[in-house]
Image 1 (tube, rainbow, N blue to C red):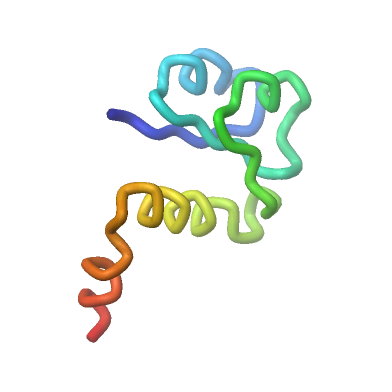
Image 2 (image 1 turned 90 degrees about the vertical axis):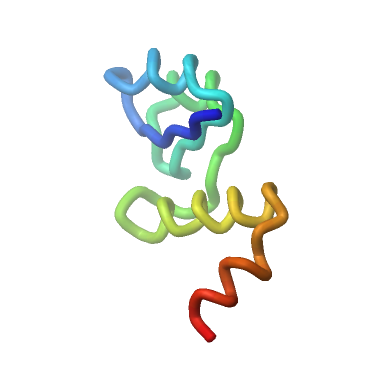
Length: 70
């Protein structure tokens, strides 16, 4: 299971290959078409954090994640 994030044409093959693919809000329209999730954040403005939080929630790992910071 691989997740990927990308925002432009050079990322297309990676995004197509990944089980779940993310693009930031300001990604190229071409990569939007192949993404599993279009993030609400722009690249460089919290998109990676949003992706990680999405994966943590999707996998049901919120409690384990929060325990790291206790």
